[in-house]
Image 1 (cartoon, helix red, strand yellow):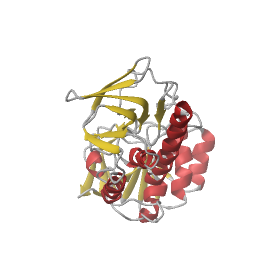
Image 2: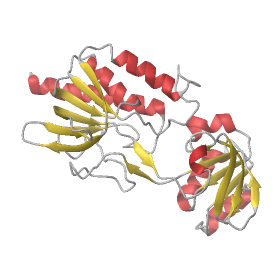
Image 3: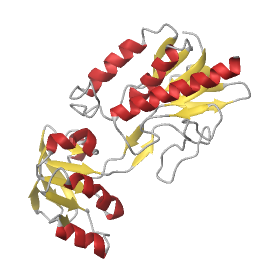
Image 4: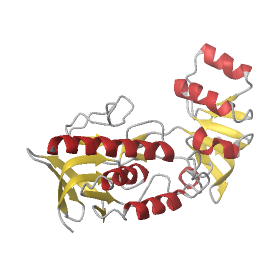
Length: 299
């Protein structure tokens, strides 16, 4: 494999592959580096993506990679990037196994790493019956006995979306709630239960929730649980001194440019809207913008 490319895309899931297709069709020499661990690898079905609704996430990404690989100027490398640096002419990328590559432009499609709470059974249910997005999963659990694991303003706003899908709704604040008087009044008005007891365990069968058990031994039956959990970036943002938003996402402008000239970002690492369809759209757009820059520089 050669070492010099027009563009290196770090992350080969939906956003990265979509960017790769746009660039491959523009005859750009592209390397896509991916470690093969997408955040939705436990999710059985992907939804809210027209033409792909209900398919397994891996089925979508496998087909995408097969189609992108048909473009002769696109190459793939299976590995983890550990260091990215910039010099006067280009960018240097190094993997954990020691391979080194250079490129004129970098696209970060690295996604994020979810940080699981210390609740037994939570990680086993993540993406199956413990879910993050009402657009991706809400229709499938509509009308079921549903919970939201969150607190404060975020929980209040999120509950509006979930309440539209299920009226049998409980808010698990996992400790003392921080709702104001008006928010609590609205919850009571809509008969939404606020449960402050701390969670200890999720009882499930192959990832499907049956009930939750609190630290004091109490139990509550449950069929689906939305959870707003913290995350961290999958890539070391300090290498390039990338600027982050107040919520921890890579900060980009309307053209998906980061604060570092020549570095672009797309997908889950840039937005709260974590969905396959959104990642594909972002990647496609970013690939087109990067190609435009390269065309202007080479004209």
